[in-house]
Amino acid sequence: MNKYIYDKLMALTDEEQRILNGEHEVNRSLYTDKGQFIIDSNKLLRKDELIDIRKHTRFIHFPKHKHNYIEFNYVYQGSLTEIIDDKEITLKKGELIFLNQYITHEIKPSKKEDIIINFIIKPKFFDYILGFLDNDNIISSFLITTLYTNYEEGEYLYFKVSDNKEIQSLVERIIIELYTPSIMSEATIKLLVGLLIVELIKNSQDVETYSVDNYEKMLIIQCLKYIDEFYQKGNLFEISKKLKQPHYKLSKLIKKHTKMTFKELLQQKKLSKAVELLKFSEYPIVEIIDLVGYENLTYFYKIFKKKYGTTPKEYREKK
Image (cartoon, rainbow, N blue to C red; front, side, top):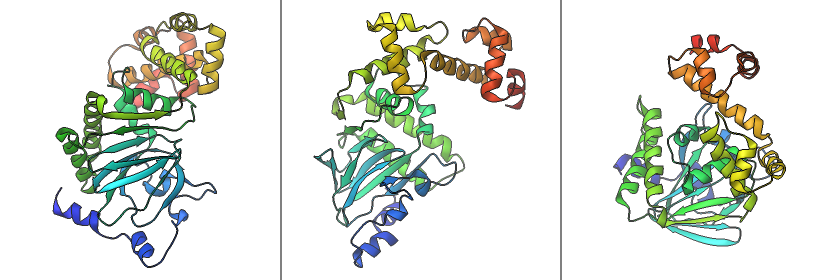
């Protein structure tokens, strides 16, 4: 790490200086305006910003809290001790942990030499990442669950990768890019985070996972994967047969966990694919409608306009 960033990380923040001067509790107003201690990304990120980093505040116990975003904690130097569901975990230098929005955790006081980098990431950031990931891996399942279902249980992925030089290098490059942004920073950060996740998947033998053992959750993940792959001709009866579940039971579970019906999820996927083709291909609109699995042109135009407020032709012209 270059000296500028190292010095910046070691320097006392205003919050840390107040703590050393006698402030005994975390000032919650810096993190949320709500009664519950749910840290708000809008307090930490600029408008329209999807990802940033923040040094964890040292010298004080950080009480139980949740976030409305996905958080990665990375131990740049020293160690980090967290308590999650009464389980104490101590991360050492070079290790990182992914926390979903529903996890409740607290953090023991860090010492001066403990430098922890908190990655603050809005869910929308991962739309790009999920586009090129294989569904059958631990990180994809973690992201799909937290982004696309209403499964409100805490989950984490703890990566014990301190000896992996490639992963350490990627994290360092992301930190440098976020601290010293350039004209191409947004694209660079997406690429680097994508590469980091790929490397973490390749080293999944070094991960400790935590989640509530929930069979319903696994069924919903399988349904979402099925829709992602077979959206053109997929139907509830086929996935019910694959999962060996009655279609009516699966229908209820999908509604319970996503607040949408199977048909609505399928339609949402088809429309998003149609938008992608309108933006990035030269296919005629009639062909796009067929490619995404619709036979009735009138119906497609109706639902497209209802969702996007414009016709497919007008949407393409505005791209």
